[in-house]
Length: 478
Image (tube, rainbow, N blue to C red; front, side, top):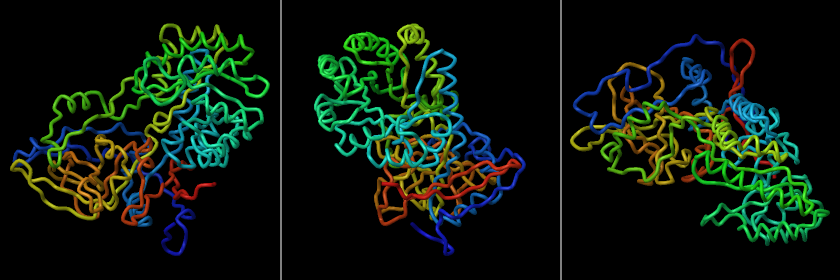
């Protein structure tokens, strides 16, 4: 861990005094294009913004203090927003009259402050490794509130899960046999492979039949079934959950105390306004991108019924909530990104600016003080599309701008598209990428070139409409 000024970053705490609210100018609407450069500039995609983000951006020096103390790129997390998102999922279950369980998908962000919010707001954690399981326990989550997922779990992970009375999602008959051989009472759900699926995960229908018949209720407690679906459509999730009710009844006939169906994650997040997203998609062109590149696939950055609202649609579809109540079956969910919605941002410093030419027009190429490995979407033939905010704000003309990383790799591009920044960026400015807590911060992080992995700054409310901030330790309990 790096140290500055003779003390660990984890010991550093600052307080933000109250500031007056201001509007700021950080979108293309605040300036005007010159020299016909609009033709090579991407349509703007300003992100939805919470109050905590506005206060952070409006404060005259807090971001600069953070950047100076850390000395490189960093992530900002506002865990109170995680708690708010958890409460929204709880409310969706309560409104539908369904017994619900929430398991935070820890792979979406490993920050300890997120786990602490889960413990404080009655959410469990979905883990897939011994390190994740131990970190969840260290964060205050009870072992019985953990779900252990993933394929071909190690014997070490299975033993630890049994010891902590965690719920284990069984992915294969071989895994079920190994669990039985380990001894000790275990709690399990059987992961069902979706019909007509080519997935490598889950059990086929005939394998589910065998597992239900073979499990000895005295040794292994079969509590239900689970599944995971790709995409973000609520309908197939509701329909597969309804179909599994038949299996729940059959399993009960074998003496199993089945009480749960888990529908996994895949709850969408609404990053940008509908009008901006529609305009962006309608005009999307390789002319916008450095080198003529174009993304192969895009996340649906506008999602009309995100998070807990999508859960409500699942429960409403074809009377699923009523059918669950009638059968005495609860529903479990495993959201990751949706619990992290608007809970964090990523900050890069600009350490270089150069002029480039595309299609006869000039644009800026910025070099950030980190790499695209800290913005994971860039490594999936895609692009993270919510526009970054250039800080500090100031007057100027709209300037098409791409952003590269500090590595020697040509493909190390943090933003390939030419973003319509409201003014020309300068060395020493900051770029704040919004809403990056879900998957962007951790998924591909790397100390390539011996560059430090960006630390996480935790922002917390204190009395007087103020914040305090500190840097979270990166040490993981093992």
